[in-house]
Length: 188
Image (cartoon, rainbow, N blue to C red; front, top):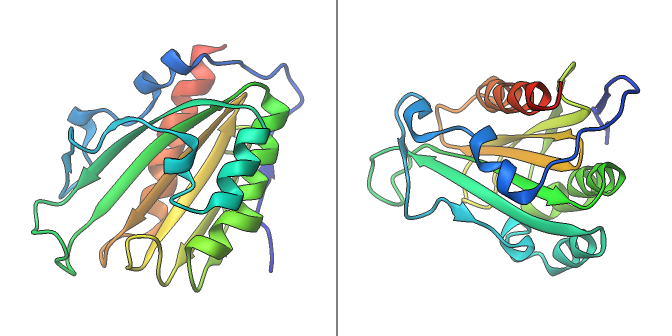
């Protein structure tokens, strides 16, 4: 397995409080093409929700100082279960330190991705936040093919997963880049 992780420069890491991350995520008016913002699914999220039922990952993230999180979900207007459906999420997991967030990102790649997906293949990603990885997969938690880009800025791990037949890895990477740019700008 090849791990594609990009490491940024050596400057003081920004530190975010849990109530600062919602505005960094994709907003309802920025819905990706073919999707709508799902207010019923977008909210604060626990460590267990981020781990999607994978208790080992949830426990490790809790040990690393997970403080709080937020998710914003966008879905196509197709009926549930429609194979043409598109789902794109973006979430922020706030940790107590940048080092713990870095360890959490690496745990997600080494432990979470192999458990929550099948057929995961690394996708190159560079110059994104403090560190990042992206993968495409044949089957993910939604039961369909998709991709995820995970980026760390300071003490926050931003996750941008997506699934659906029209989704490309570049779609989630572009959203992750938008979020990382916002987060970096807040603390510069």
